[in-house]
Length: 95
Image (tube, rainbow, N blue to C red; front, side):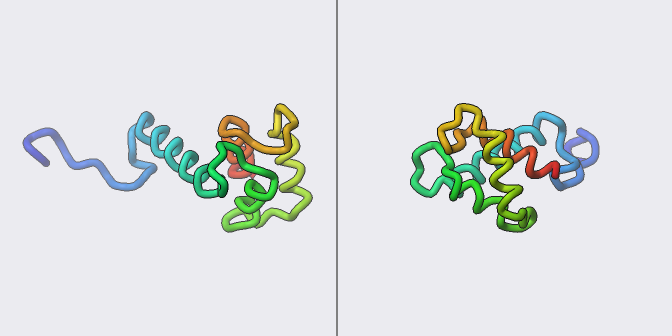
């Protein structure tokens, strides 16, 4: 116990309260987007986004990558903005 406030919380993302887990996931998503937005223009091109799905833990074949990209490129401009990327990444993680 610390100062009589009860036991210390267990560590690890699964032990965080719901708002903290949401915040951690959002930060991870933002970091992933920024890491692959190679030209820092606020969009992921098809090449930039496909790099994500060719790495661990995904290792998707090219046809699956292209299918996901087309599905989540809502405005059809050939690139993913952050909001489109969020859906794309969530779907990839669920697959």
